[in-house]
Length: 563
Image (cartoon, rainbow, N blue to C red; front, side):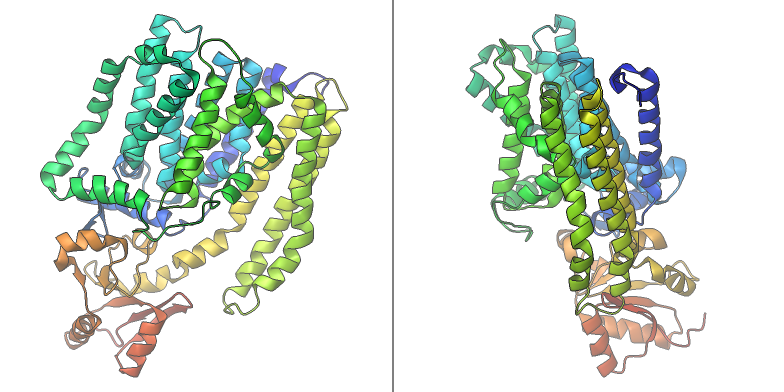
């Protein structure tokens, strides 16, 4: 390190950026796709590419109308260009994470200062939740990346020094971001940003803002992007509009129809963990929004409202999943970056000590916690806990070291505060990636990938049926390149099976009849069973040969198969 601020050194910024991108991109393919989301969206894109139908979404060959198509489109395009694989399945979400980071760097630079923009990028790129979800094939990062475009477009278009040309272009970017967010995950793509705008104008009494939205041009652009798919899928599938707009939006928000409820404080742990290593500056960032008193448009107020409203909206929803609050992190990153710029060395050192304390807590507490966790666990899971512990300890050690180094550097040189920010960002990002990488043995166990060779050995004929009895495997179909025939358990495909009942077997006894028929005809067949169902079949003396077994599943094939 030298005495000059790292933000003034082009070489330092290039080294940080290139190193960050190498790790970010390498981690996209470093882990197995983990059910449910990762396997589901990889398989849907694989089926889309294989079928050539880019309008009607399907999972396991069954109509699947829960979400819009953007992520499936992008994944299918990635598969078409680069082939099937783990990093290909995560490429779109990885790019969306980078788009979010680049957007706030650009926005922070244009609205506040170059230093603030750089720090906002460091904060967001190293935040545990953003960096982690950027490597998960789920819709939440796709939605968040597009919503960040919308948020940044609004901030840039409404800033006080924006020219008429810039105002129009950035507002059109905002509308395009909302359209892509809508194609990512539905109506929240424009409803939530619209609600933030309404709340902002009511609180700030900035009624003229509505005259600067380029409403009709923006609405036209929004419809040009979104309407074609919604029209086409409705024409081909008349049942889609009611299920998508009513069941998947109104019913999901107002009830526990998906059994994904949670207490009002459900998201607080995810927020606190997700913002690490910047937890010690979170309140300061929020206060930066509260205390803003600039004339005209107030960007920090809008960022505060964005963060608080999104968090509140999902907290009162009848459906809660951890990734729902991901869109607030870019706004928090900008708020925290402004707070850092205005903070003293003392504030940075307090944040560093808190980060170090998290690492020390991990080092001291994880071994005993792991000992308690493995008690009464299935024998197959005990090594998985034991294998994960060294990775968690390594991440904790890096967290402790990074926090202490940032604490020391912050007051030891002229540009110490800036170097402390870099150290917190670097150690936080790497510690998070180590945590995720160490989870891969668990991911393989959850996905059942150890049994792929045994199953593939039975699939000498591509038409060999693979049944899923009492459970559905979300990742195996993608890795096997083979759809499953559902038995007794429709899982999330219940609505699609109501439209296409011929694609599954509702009753277990009908499966038994079909299984015995395969045996009589000398045909190969494979079934993935829930464990209690396997024991029931044992009692019935059903002919079967176990080719894979763990506490989650039993995989059987017919004995003495003659091809």
